[in-house]
Length: 284
Length: 188
Image (cartoon, rainbow over all chains, first blue to last red; front, side, top):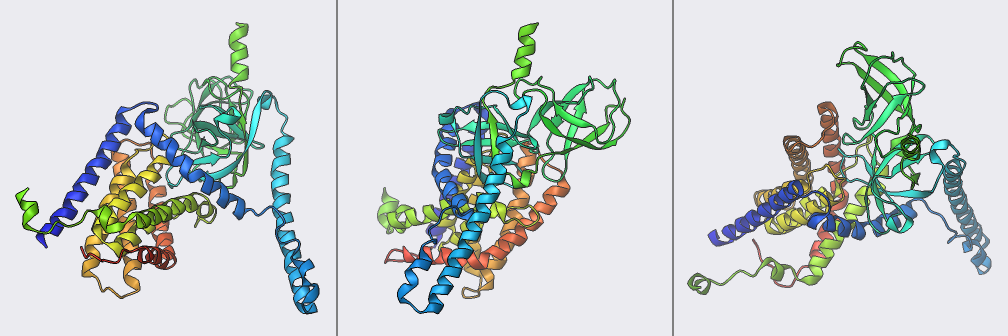
């Protein structure tokens, strides 16, 4: 009895030690390293299942279309029932296709200065498993030209940026994640600053660097193009509320994002990087 | 050497389990991870995703004891850690799930074995402890964090959701665990 307990405890100590080694490795390494490799492997294992589940969950195809035709030898009742089921299935599929088509056509009609240049459209296939981080797996990766730090948008505005890439998938950090930030400014005003995520339902917070211009509710916030990641002029959201004095550092500007982060289905990855910022630099 | 000769050596955990069983349990954990990040991320309660992988680990610890519980906890936690975006503490889910897998395996020996409710209540309590300690440790280790109010809401809803999932998940996990159980059963 004593020996058995001792053995379980030894195993426990070994695996606690292993966990702490992993945590330490995570703190000490920068990019890549053994954990980077492990990350790639784990995503490569789970991503195909994610794709499969996403496909089943939004059924597209017509497996059941011919069910009604098999009924000739059966009773009328069974035939009609099967036909009805097939039609219902088709209606469901058509509905799913219609939704996909609407989302895709909105994305393809997107013709704004900030999406000029090369891009890749991708479907969201999975979510970060934690409730405290906001990120999405998409079904395109380095094979399609996606690299780390590329901007991700949809028809409504800024979604986030790519933070890790494998061959066939990429992980997009959403703008609402507490670790996410982007260079931002109020449209048509001089002051620039930084927009930061606060998690779901909390809005984004905007920190302006200079405070020469006044900020009002319902002002438009767009990317400034000065962070080296996001091209300038991508819509982010509207100023929702302002607390505190404009000239005081404790002023808080809460921005309501355009993008519905809970219902993301298709997104566009901009392959060119910050076009406008690079152009400005060249002209100087 | 002499100690090993004195008493019969208990077989290692690998010998206890057998290859087919290890693969079956690994498959269950991987599928649970994929389901958590796809289907369950659409079917949230007020935007909160349940921690299905944790429920599976707790059920395994409950059916198979603390050794299986802690090893499954470590690997399931590590798999979850590796799916997170950078800026999360990698290895923290592994640590917390290891500890809870071991603890639940120890506790189950003192619970009424045949009650349907025991695994459900175990999951309720264990989820609350796991989510609370994960949040505390992540904040202590300097991870960028959301507000405390939001965290409290998430913990409450995850506890509720995990509890609701247990009556569905426990029989499935038990079936897989029993199906691939080797002929000779060691109690530990």
